[in-house]
Length: 213
Image 1: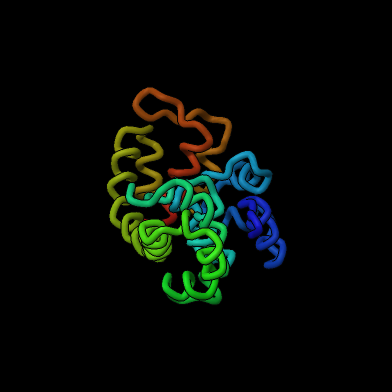
Image 2: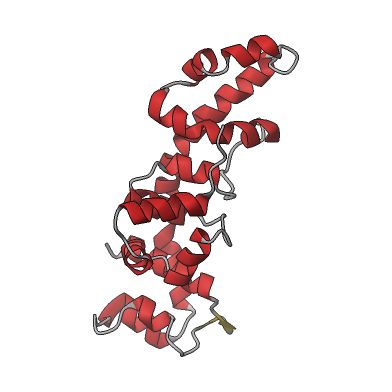
């Protein structure tokens, strides 16, 4: 089974859609430098929210992106690491061709199960089924959690930041300068006495874009 690389998949999908990195940044709200890190393989563990935005813009299955990344999938402890590491790469075929975990066991793994009954115990087969069933719910949970948490996070961050940013974003923000341009300008943006890093700024932009649709 081919082991996909997140950066290569994102880069090929972006090129196929005729998007520059800057345009992908504009559409997703993810900063240009951060996207470049992902495509170059320097960061293969972006947040679930980032992966969700990339999936939506690039027309890629979210479950596929999170399965080939190093991002924590948030699976239960009932699934062993060897199951996750092995079967995450089967996600593309599972999404495209197979509709249930039962079908995956019967159509894809039947030969392996017959050859290695010592490994494919009933418990292991149950773990594999559980893995695919949980993967199918990841996108739903991510969308639900993202929508529920973003407003509170934004209020908490902006409420303790530079008053000028709070005023711009929450009330009288003028389109003469985008939030991204402001945050990534030469000026230093402080929150609770700490200067925001590029990753902090990128997260802040993502939250703002989700709320102010």
